[in-house]
Image 1 (tube, rainbow, N blue to C red):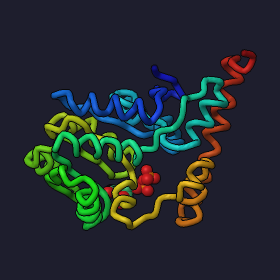
Image 2 (cartoon, rainbow, N blue to C red):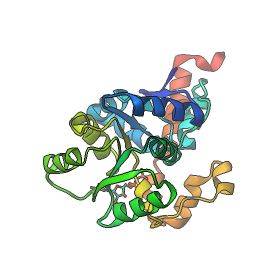
Image 3 (spheres, rainbow, N blue to C red):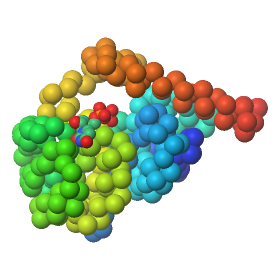
Image 4 (cartoon, rainbow, N blue to C red):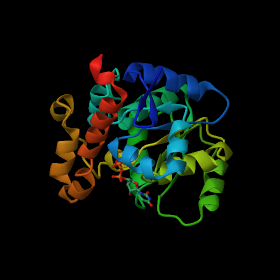
Length: 244
Ligand code: UDP
């Protein structure tokens, strides 16, 4: 079931349900793409109709982060939970490992995708890493040809938003992949270059605070996030859902 939050139609599903749906998509013989919007995406999509269209055109729209969850609560239509992109990616790696499938990693600074790939193969030995490419390229079509020549089943696209979503929507079907996922900084985490918040912080919904502590330069970006909650409150007042 879909649940709209400030213009974006999120899938209202748990991590387990998302993993099952992802496995189905990975089993179907055509291209699908998955997006993992956080509050920054919601704000960006308000000013970028193409980005909004691309997000709503995805096969799965997962709520990445507590900001989206809080917004859904404020709107009076709470989502079942959040599904962090990196956790969905892990579930898809486990699924690909079972299939003995092919993985391509696109994005991040030079060398990061190779290191992420090396670590992934340590944990999932039945995956074939069919290629990697850094995310700082000019010629989109040349990269597409490289990806397609590698014949991946699963493709991680980690170019930051909205670049990664627009890349998937524009070129994805020409890659031959069955499933592409837009994953932001996930390759940096998988390569060990950036640390994910410990579980104790994650359980409290404080992953954002941990990230801010580790990367204080993100403060400017993150300061905009409460705006999403304010917009959600305004929307609820306007729609009268507050009276339910
Ligand atoms: N990136 C890239 N190409 C670009 C811009 C960014 O490959 O032109 C990478 C960047 O190196 C990082 C990721 O995209 O690995 C985006 O990370 P960010 O922290 O912005 O994403 P978030 O995790 O917040 O979604």
